[in-house]
Picture 1 (cartoon, one colour):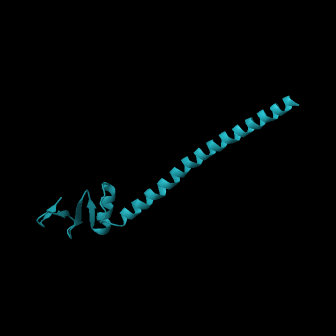
Picture 2 (cartoon, one colour):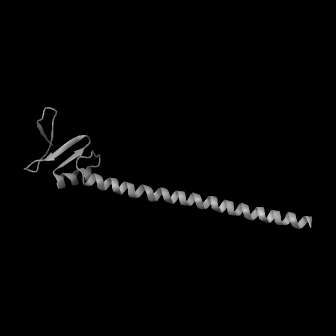
Picture 3 (cartoon, rainbow, N blue to C red):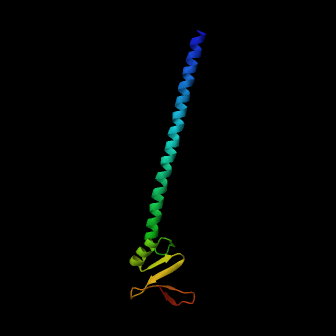
Length: 101
């Protein structure tokens, strides 16, 4: 009788440890997949917000060119660039003069 009790206890502990280990692996997998799902939509939303607002500063040259075509102005690396009526790109200096690129 004593041997059967020890046998059942060891089986129970073995099953319990397997379940605990599988739960640990499952939770790690869920956390990893959640990180990927959260980062991508936020990044896309942020890019859309930048695309439709030429007053947000950007370092992305392609986005800057797109906003110049669409809005005829765009802020790039701290300077606001404009497109003139002759389709020339310029920015305003500290004195207020137009500096053409």
